[in-house]
Structures are given as C-alpha cells and as structure tokens.
Image (cartoon, rainbow, N blue to C red; front, side, top):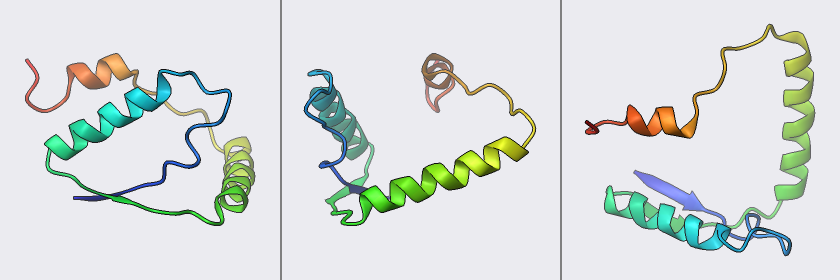
Length: 83
C-alpha cells in the first residue's frame, strides 16, 4: 500500500511537543506493516480545508445523527491479529 505523507500541515508552532514523535512512530508502524511511504506536498491545502469544512458543515446539518464513532481503544482491541 502506498501512503502519501504531508508533514508541513501537522505541526503548528503551538502543537503538543509529543505530536511529532507520535507521528513518526505511526509512520514506523505503517512501514513495518509493509506500507510504502512517500513525502508529498499539498500546495492548495488551506483552500482544500476550507472547502472541506463548508461541504461537511452543510451535509452534517441535513443528515440524521450517526452512530457514535469507535474510540481508539475499541479499534485497537478489534484489530486483526489481536487476542
């Protein structure tokens, strides 16, 4: 599986200092699982993010409530190969 990694938008100046090491550890895990990582650039990121917020905000106002999201703990307990 190929995964594009865009780092520049994930680490604002006021981000938790633990964010970068956690991000890097996640990338190491994905690589260990066989992912092929490639650094990518998203030059139109601010515009894309704004369009995403507008689109999802409008959709969310019209849709019925969804089931609650799974928490990370529930997802980890049910991952393939876990006991």
